[in-house]
Image (cartoon, rainbow, N blue to C red; front, side):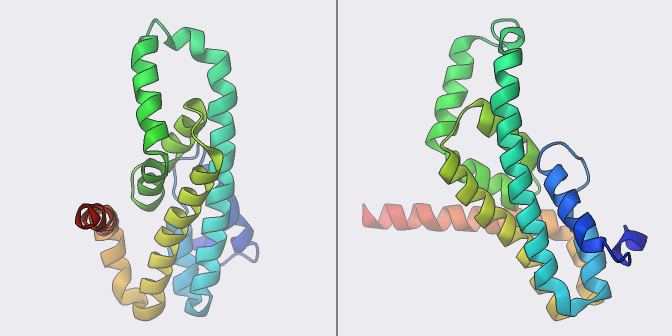
Length: 186
């Protein structure tokens, strides 16, 4: 990734990795984004935007894969792996909490690609899916960009070591805040 970060087409690679990681590729774009941003801190937010745009578009592809592939493999899963009732229960929960499920997966280290494909399988509402993906992925990549822009190399080790915990705590705080507001309103 370090050598790729210095390549003239690094931004295209960043977009491509973010795109395919949201559907099926195992390596997150954060690695390349961090390397590129440390090489040129003034482009931190440009790199975050590229990562977010590629990731959201890749998430849309993941949604399409889930939706299209499910039709082809449904007979293998139901009733041999789980019952129609179990699938319906999971689908109902996912549809009920669609925005939050996708947002949490998009923002935290939970495998976003699993949720993009599952979103298509469960046929959750598309607009909330895209909105939650955009907010979550942009939040994640712009958080990395902000930390690197402000602190540079000094924060890299902390991001690499604790980023998963930081994003999980932030997501829990956001959800807790919404529940607190809901509770206060009655």
